[in-house]
Image (tube, rainbow, N blue to C red; front, top):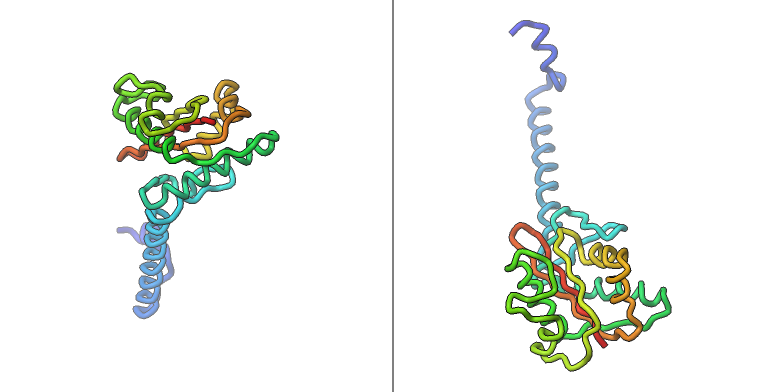
Length: 194
């Protein structure tokens, strides 16, 4: 190699062997911190973290059995903040509607499309009744996305028809369902009822 090439290839000035070893230990330590931080961000026990816009801070948005309660709580808080700003009564999560919405999210994934009919031809009313819900279903919102529940709700608020369902003054109960594929695609279902 010619001498001018050698000078161009020097990234760090020559050091003593002890300095080089300390430098390598520092680099290895920093690399370990980065790897452990990434693992902590994907902890299935922790609620997925969001930024100020409602987007996932870690890129991948894991929804697990261990954090689904926190995901649902954040969703109902988001819906209620919007409803209360409009002078509407808050809504509460309903176990039967959650069961119905979860089943529909799984069904949409199996069918490969976001739509209101289950694989068996069922409607949101049929699914809610099968889950033991005895109230009146007012509407159902669906989404096929890689977005968080907060982003899905914000998207529904942008369309007059879906916004009207979220802000129906008769609404008192909701069920948020989700199914996450191995690719991390999320299928959201939000059933609104009174």
